[in-house]
Image (tube, rainbow, N blue to C red):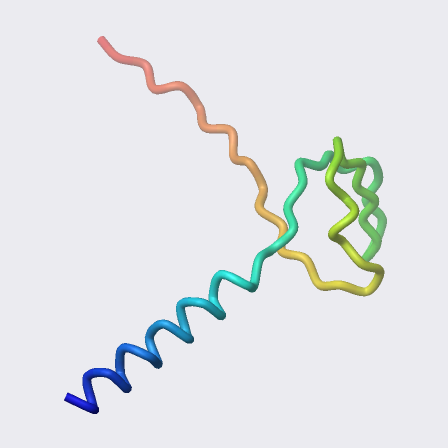
Length: 69
């Protein structure tokens, strides 16, 4: 019984800590790209980004239309 309670307490602490970590996000457009420098212009919500902070970029892919019969 003590093991079950201890496991439940650990799960609750991990779940609580996971919600405390959140990522900033914003919709941005590339303005200029030269060598290793990339300048982005974002619509809004840039207050969460700090200078020197690492960011992960996801590129929107445009797919070709599939033509049928």
